[in-house]
Image 1 (tube, one colour):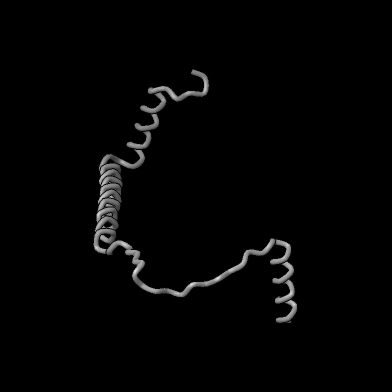
Image 2 (cartoon, rainbow, N blue to C red):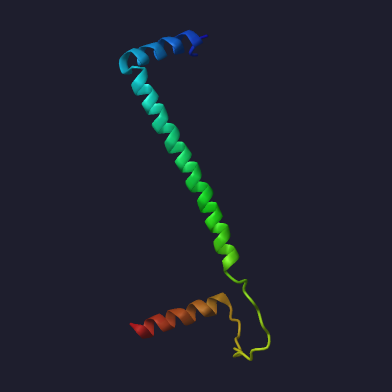
Length: 94
């Protein structure tokens, strides 16, 4: 296997790591890592529940046509005319 890592190379690296750190320290690192992953998953699960709960607590938007509102009459202009009008207003402000 050119460029690949064989099982024997992995076993040799694992043996060197065990000799350097010892099994007790590696066990502690594994326990800490496992606890961190478990805590992360728990936090994500709780956040999803809180997100669902927030959505359920808030009332849905309601549209009513009974209220008499203001009516605005607008006129559409061409883009060039609108840009010229905006430029005129900007010059007046200066």
